Length: 478
Image (cartoon, rainbow, N blue to C red; front, side, top):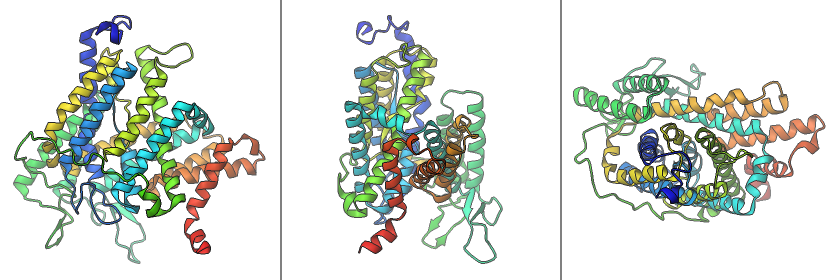
């Protein structure tokens, strides 16, 4: 084992690797809870949940989420020998749920995720990934991440009932507002506020597993509140209940463990989206997924390598190509399993901080994810209000990158600004990316710097122009 994983060679010990893998798992285990709430909270174009019917089976989504994360993280440890864990990507899952599935069936949407993963894999094997990475200006890459962060935070605030849509009436021109009629009301909102305070305090105090701890503690609080106050769901047969639980009524589970249900595996249609929304729109959605998934891994593996002291003179971690190949396979595998694209997690840094330096830590993390599959029934009791504070915190973490944008350069600042604000304001990641790319190309033309735009970026900007004009173009052509 020492020879295979190079434990001693990298200055580590078996104990450090085991401890690092354990810490990484508890730092990112929240995704087993959070992914079902995000994917299960959206309906496709036919009004069906991801598991079929009007209501999702959260335990089923949780089991498959843990399964795929476990298998791929073990694969990363064995193939790439790098202390990097993988799981469903936050932001990507929100985009799939709210930006793609609403236009087609869930199977079609996951087919697009598979296509995106296969494209990335081809780009890695042919060397084009680096070329495309260099084609997009750094400022726009950062803006995409920041915009996704704000979008995630808004989803969390809306799902908790902290922010709500105001009635579309003449005397209420403000589209959204605080709570019900500008006032916070209801026990679920209070539970959310307590959860938000808790996760912020734990994170600020650098408590390992802050997100997971806050979700578990807030869920227990929610169960107690429901038992005492009998709040009930937000929507009942008798009509809406504005002060009710948004998605799941927190009640004690009948069992803590169960045989996991992996029925979601293979529930995808590779080319069904092309019939649902047309070739142009489908290709743009694949490209948007690719952009959202494309750049994170290179930054993540470099950051983890730097933290572990494993970078070479060129600033690359060991087995870079293998890392990228496993990550690309993970994107496609997540779609094939219907739990959205899987990607490398920056939370792996917590395990590195505990001493992890090899892939053995990833194997430990992966085995713990596999063990988590039998505890999926616990996920079914977690209400949105207990989980979405994590989305707000993740939004903050992603927002901090905004400081790296050069705001004095209008050619980058304005496109970055449009990218960031349009994602939450339009509830669409693709709209933000498209507006940013088009604005960047137009500003270069306006300043006579046509040659500074990478040819690939011109193609992308043109595709997004078609994307925004797809309705009038369709009417004109037909």
